Image (cartoon, rainbow, N blue to C red; front, top):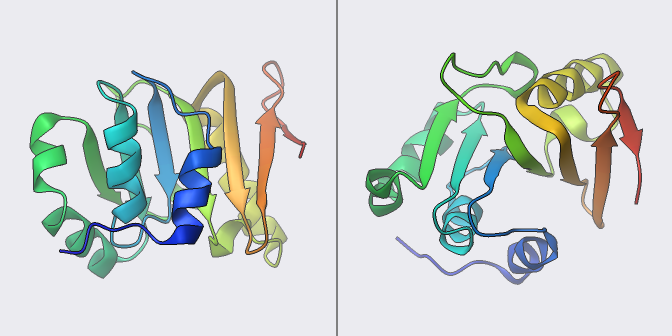
Length: 152
């Protein structure tokens, strides 16, 4: 499998505040190229990459066996608006979504549901980064109300 990351995804990964040991949720992972790169960069951390497409998850899993076996990466087929953490799963430090329909501003009710699910999946001071096709935006959540606070 081609492991080279596109220039666009490389720029996204470089813009993210990735640090050793953090937990990352990638929403809409497609074939998993960005998830593999993030897993490489966070060392002993963990990336959970999700996608609503069974085909995407099959491709991502097939191309990520080394990372899956090391425990640095896992995949799950689920739409973001349906995501719930497993009972033993720790919340995430950051979440990232690149061109995800549920977060592109066209479907307001779906976006509201997705943001609520993301807020529940993140730690109290967790951060969400969304690329709707032009630039990476950060969305933070109020640590008390868990409402989305749109920032830059």
